[in-house]
Image 1: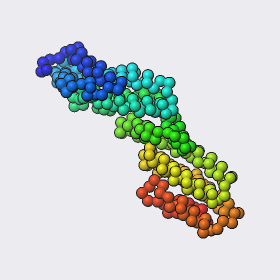
Image 2: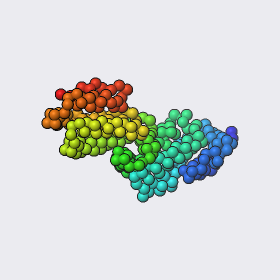
Image 3: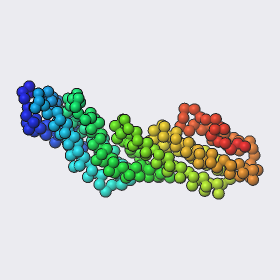
Image 4: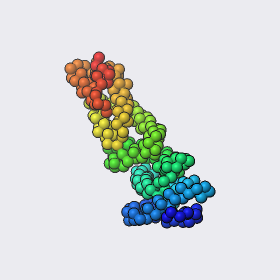
Length: 302
């Protein structure tokens, strides 16, 4: 294909590949849609259209067609699949479509790969594919995705059966949608997770202080810390796990320290027993490689 290719002819050839690539969003595997010869045909088409001299160099037109193919697939397949879905069903469909979309975008990117060598394109093909999904899907439905993730975490904390693998996939999505450069999308979700946990454990601390002895309170707090660690380690990033456990520690132990001290004195709890309970709590690994000292974690040994 060393001859000159007109814009109309080239786009016609590529349209065949684009139509097939979109079928990946319907669940078709890539190897069932394309042969190696077809891949080369589409790649060669783009290559020769890019190296032709002006005014027959069509790099800009090809980049626009690549972006338009992504947007068309999102409008025709992704957005309709998310419509009227909420909570876990929304996250299931989102992570499923995101996985398929990445495969489709990689396939299309293989056809248009030579564009990544062109100095005048706005962004790499990979960055463009992430940006399109972020602008047309994530930014539009951000609050629904955010609320669904928080709801599942709360259901898990309340001992309701959930798919923790789904939550792990959702957290990965929040990271990937930033294109590996912008972590604000996950950071914003992390802040919401920590704020929600703070509200939950603050209420729990008040209830336990009113209904439990100081010894029972500390036992429950230690169980909560251990349970939270075991659960969230399966789907949150390690840095978030550490921050979350510090929030739990603060609201259950540190912030209630003076009230528990007064309770212990009124109950005449044996000092040795009480100190052993505090030490057990203080020696817990709160998501870090090393635990803090007892005085740093449980300031209630007075």
